[in-house]
Amino acid sequence: MERATAFRTLDDCERIREAAASARSAVVVGGGLLGIEAARGLAGRGVPVTLLHLAGHLMERQLDEEAGLILRETLGALGVAIRTGVTVSAIRERHVELAGGELIDADLVVLACGVRPVVGLARDAGLEVERGVVVDDELRTDDPSIFAIGECAQHAGRVYGLVAPGWEQASVVADLVTGADKGARYRGSRLVTRLKARSVELAAMGETQLTEDEAEIVRFSHRHKGTYRKLVIRDGRLVGAILLGETSAVGTLTQLFDRGGPLPGDRTGLLFPDLAGVGGAAVADSPTRMPDSARVCQCNNVTKGQIRACWESGARDVEAVAAATRATTGCGSCRDAVEGIVGWLCEQEGVSA
Image (cartoon, rainbow, N blue to C red; front, top):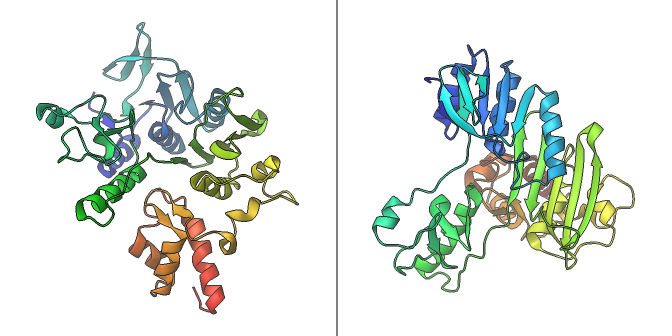
């Protein structure tokens, strides 16, 4: 099929946009972040779209079953038909064939099935390869003179398909190679996932799949409103969270998760920060109480302290901060926080932002 395309680059986006202008029906294969964003975008352009996903619920790596169900219902109300637990066996002219022979109409097919590390060179060189190129906490392969970072690297059994871990890994390798910090080690990334799809608010972080036997679970669900909130707490610290439908608490929870600090006793207040009398919920939402070590931009690993230093060096608006630090230039979900910090700094000095 001429109108089958991967969804990976800006050029892919342009091809999909052009094909969508005349498409009568579309299928998106893959119910992860990119697949959902692609399906929502096509539906928003008026294209009848079906989203096919191999697993039993959407975004199974980030969401539990209930959150996946609510997300499915939310997307369904926005015009995305969803089939989970299905396997695509072939892409034919104007159809997608499922295992078992069922055909689904499609003159546009978008493939968003995840990434697979390109490891042929490493394997040919005799390096240890599993799913990715196996590395240790120094990001070294089993040949200590060779490092691997990014989507091809497998650390502690995990391959990351996001940009933020790549930056963190690069920083460790740079410190080791230059000698700036010979004790630098990579301990894995604490990922915060934000879905960027119009009319769908979703953030997920950490270990969301733990059970009541493994952790303290605080949960609120309102399927009719498309709302789901969940905290996963272990040893008094936040190790995972899901926010679906309304994400006003995401700033606070992201920082508590990233810093690994102890939680306030009022767990309900963390889920509903707008309620009066919330203990400790303002820790992330107020720049005055946000520590300089707090990571504001997850994609590019930019802290409040770096933004402050940038501002003190003369960057007086978000665009200048972005040019100097790359904050806001990844997924863009941190823009409000960066604007808040810049505005607060300007207020302290009586400067117009």
